Length: 262
Image (spheres, rainbow, N blue to C red):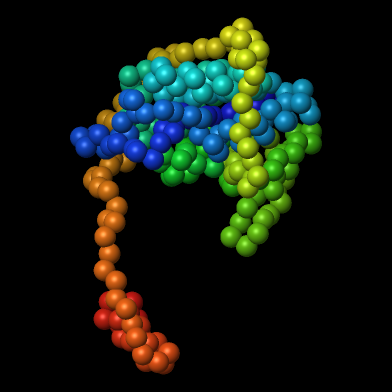
């Protein structure tokens, strides 16, 4: 069984800066980590590896410094790492990113599972995982908390608005993973890091994966950032006094004035 895990390098900081011209994140000088949801997806894959003697490949897309998250995956126990790094990828939106990742996954050959984090903590769109599934023409199950494999089927427990649901789906399938409340990211020992240098690691360009450059980067992205602005921190407050019934009526009057009630 071959499991592919998509991981992303994200800023480890609340001091996020935006390029006003491109609407993209400024990552220079900002410490980075593996996206926590992707970290959980990776640990899920590594647990399945132990149970089923599977092979795990970590795939990421980003600038050269994103190599660190691929190396982390290798040090934690993945068997092979791939970094998609090319100036042609710069500024890609979720559609263009999904397109590139799907081509890389196809280039890896036959696979049973593709695991992604539910979303990235920098963009919070939750679109790349489903987008990759669409590009690969395989089924998907989102917001998964637990995964088990039995033969050629995957059993998943997924979160819903009302609790959770159990689903059984034929493989290959793409799953997006949530994190357990008590999940703590595991980090490798020095020996694991040292040994990870001996594992296969590849850097692929747009040409290597056969991507059409008109579908990549800012120009190839169908969505564009129109405006970036900081959230408003100021607000007006009003103290209401009187008997409970009077205060309730004042609240109703305010809501009607603001067109929240009719």
